[in-house]
Length: 53
Image (spheres, one colour):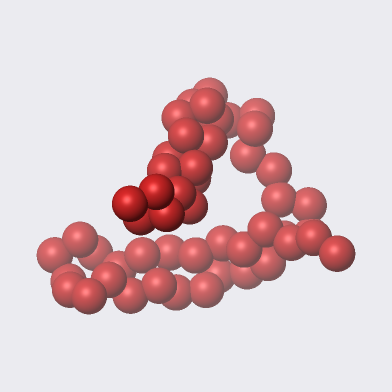
């Protein structure tokens, strides 16, 4: 099974940030977007944050 979850973050001036679930897409796709490479790097940064320290 596979699903891409969509979330939204609260405004940056609010602390702590609030994550809001939007939906789960069975066929999540974003590679067609113009800045897909930057998005992939951002995802990797978030996933790896703190794992190497």
